[in-house]
Structure formats: structure tokens, C-alpha cells
Amino acid sequence: MSSKSTGLRQWRQRFSALFQDHEIFVRTRGHVRFLRVSALWQKRVALIGGLVLVAWAGITAAVFINQLLTANERAEVAAQQAAAAASEARIAQYRDRVGEIAADLDERQAQLEDWQRSYFGADAVPGEAGEAAPQADAAQPAVETSAIDPRLPPEAQILARIAARQEALSARLLAAVNERAAKAETAVAALGLDPKTLVRNAASGRGGPFIPVRDRDARGKALGPAFAALEGALFRMEVLERTLVAAPSGNPANVLMMSSGFGHRRDPFTGASAMHAGLDFRGPVGTPILAAAPGRVSFVGRKAGYGNVIEVDHGQGMMTRYAHLSGFTTKVGTQVTAGQQIAKMGSTGRSTGSHLHFEVRLNGVAVNPRRFLEAKADVLEVKNDARQRVGALAAHRGAR
Ligand SMILES: [Zn+2]
Image (cartoon, rainbow, N blue to C red; front, side, top):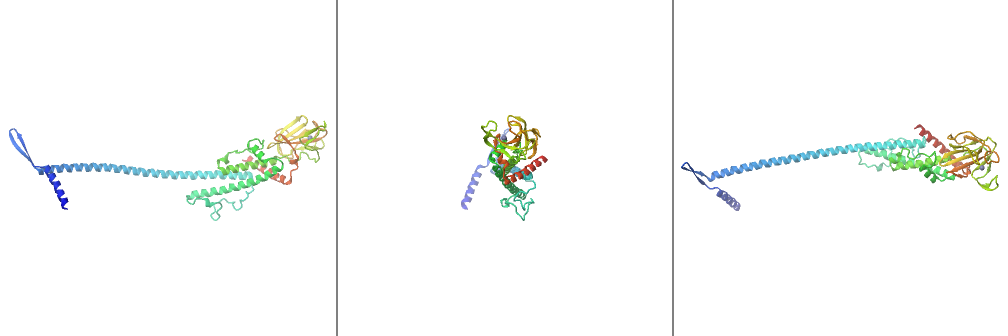
């Protein structure tokens, strides 16, 4: 305490030492006066000057601080506004996203329903029992609802549930398609055809006029991998079923007797061994000749050796040829059904008597027609199913 007061006293002494009484002599026109400036006055002036300085510094600082604060406030308000704008943008983005997801779901649903109607018609898709009403049902959690994130906002959860149900429906549809395709595949293989080659040829556009147009709308791929897989499976199923329908298993003439087998035999004219590319059916001249499968008449006319010939293109690379005819009952370009009369039996060309020479060609190569004509009942049953389905598909596409 004492040291502090002595320190203060010392400062005061130093301060007082700065101000000492001054006497100033002023001479004006011979008169000499003297002005006395006391230390007290000097101190007062110095004090006032000091105070003015301090006041000015204070005001300047206040103005400066005020400016700083205002700038800070402005920045803060701007930051708040930016945050609000960002949040609004986020909300708008989320709304857009919900709209987008809903539109996607809608498109997928339309595609699924279209496929289901086109390929299954009135048939329910297997495994659909109890799932008929596609309404959200809390009492019956239909599909993997556990996969839905509970942190999602309510509207997003609704969409997620719809998406999950849709996935389940497309999985059931895929299973049903694969099951049907497997049946058709077995039947196609039983006819001696190679299902893999058929599907591959069709996919590369070499299957003839009856191949389904793949990706006709290119929608499946755009709707994601599950839909692309479903579209691929539907394509495969359709190719196999159409092949079954196109397989020439109908009798080309209502005569039972086959007078000549397929393969090497003695030529009836030269006696030499020759390849016989078809089957012969013996019958009276004028016997109706029937299309062995539905297709388009691709040739009507004469060919060396065959005499009067008619050819029908069945698609999937399959063609039938009917030779030695006495007349035709159809023209090139006509769509014919299985069993429809296309010509009359005769003995034109290299023929020893009235008969039908019947050939089946697969991608231009003659194959034994017996494997089609003698198809087993189970194969014919699958074929019959396929015929109805392909017919319904054509009707559906025609109506669209
Ligand atoms: Zn023949």
C-alpha cells in the first residue's frame, strides 16, 4: 500500500515538474508588460486538451465498433437467409424427388400390368393368391416391409412400401414366365429343335416374320435391372411358344399312308441311291393339301423336279414345302392357319403317281418331318396352350 502511494506520488511529482510558473515579458510600443502563466493554468489547459483527445478517440472507436457490429449483423442475417433458402431448396428437392419416385412407380406399374394382361390375360399370375387387392394393408404386411427405413418421412415410406410390393409382383411374374418358358423349352427340345439357338437367332433378328420385336418400346431396360430381366424372360418365353406354334405338326393331307421315308433311298427313276428330303403321302389326285402349321404362303409355282410347289413360312426359320401338286387354292402372301387347304394333290414333276411330297426345312436345311408329325401328346398339349396364348397376345397387341 505504501509503495503504491509512493509510486503515485512520484508520478504526480513528475507531472507537476512539467508545468512550472512562467513569466513572459511582452514589449508593446515601449511599454513592457509581463504575463504570468501559472502552472495551474497550464495543467488545466493540458487536462482539457487531454479530455478532448480522449473524447475524440472514444467517439471514433464507438463509430468504428458500431460499423463493425452492423457488418456482423448483416452477415448474420445474410447467413440466416441463405440457410432458409437452402432449406427451402432441400424441401423442394425432396418434393421433386417424391414426385419423381411416384412417377417411376406409376410407369413400372403400368408396364407390369401391361405385361400381365398381354401374356397372362385373365389367368392369375401364380402365387398371387391373397394379393388381389393392391391396397396398403397394415394388418397384412405383404412384402419385406422390414426393408423399409423407419426414419423415412411418411410419404416416402408409402412409396417405399409400394415399391416393395411392386418388386414382389414382378418377381412372381418372372417366376411364372420362367415356368411357362421351361415347359415350352422342353416341348421344343422334344421336337428336335435347339431352344438356345432359336432364342439367340430371334434376338439377333434372324427368326423370320413371326419373331417378337424385342424392346419394342425399350421400356424394360429404362425401368431398371429387374424389369430388364423380366423383359428378357418374356422375350424368351414368347420365342419358344411361337416356335411351338410354328412347328409343322399338322397332317399335310388326310391320308395315312406314308409311302416313302426320309433319308437315303433308291431313286425310283435311276435306281441309284439318293437323298429323299421329305415324306411322301399317297392319295387320289385332288386330295386337299393342308398347311401343317400357321404361316405365310411364301412360294406358289413350279420348281424343277418338284413340279407344282407351294411353300409356307412359319417363322423361327421353319418352312414347309408341298410338291407334285395338281393345283393351288391360295396365293403368295396369304396368311394361313394350321389345317387350312392350300393346294390339291397331283403328280407333276418327277413323280411316278399321285402323291404329296412334304418337306420341313429349318433355316434352309431339310429335317425329318416325322419328329413334328409324331409329336407326343404332352408336347401337343403345350403346343395347344401356346397357340391360344400367342393368339391372345396377337389380339391384345392388335387392340392396343
Ligand atoms: Zn418325295
